Length: 293
Image (tube, rainbow, N blue to C red; front, side, top):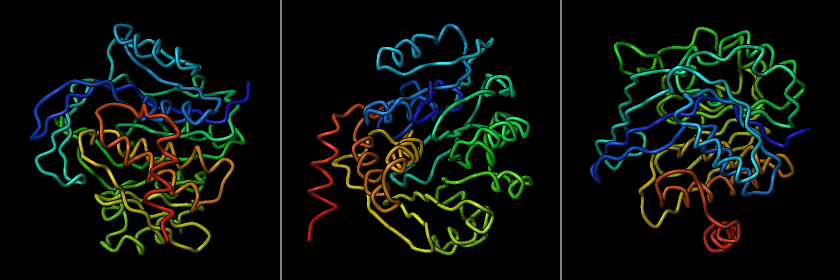
């Protein structure tokens, strides 16, 4: 089968710590992304790694109509995410276990219009896997977090990315956040950072920040704010944003995809866990907040 969207990345068991309290939720870019794509009525697949004790998450995806390809590992990737303030860009992340690196065999033969790569930690998507994906003929969307976050004594730290040029030459859509963009480019200005990152090869840059997102495509900038009624589901913001952008981008222009990404991310921020709203609510919020004259 040829899929519209395929998500590659670990399932993560996330302990979320914020001023609102502590709770454990199912996470991972592939989980957040698949929930978005399938609700947008797209043929969706997930390639992931996790422990058998967490397979119930896969059953939930299958019940939604997602095809799942998985490798059973001794442990799942377990993260602890601490949000000390209301600033969505400010957080500390700790890792207690990892499901290990993907292999070329796990991604070989993927037939998908777009593949969204959402790793959690550097090493999860090794160079040989990227080379295999680059030869698939698919549009490649990649989140930099899985390449700049490195586990040091149990804590995830941001470090420079030595392979940035060799990897990004194969990427069509690059997702980053404000913190990652500044670290990679050395500049705080979001527009300038997006322009610098595009020079590595990606045609489109999706850059999230605490108040919204910036898209740089076709030498033009498109900016849209987030409009959540309340902020509850901070974790998975970026995963939801790039998934909704890549999903809408299959058949629509960058600014149209950016509007959908901002809208779906706004709604996701209102609740913990993956996006689970009716698509009509997305359309209604677009009319209310983004199409006003």
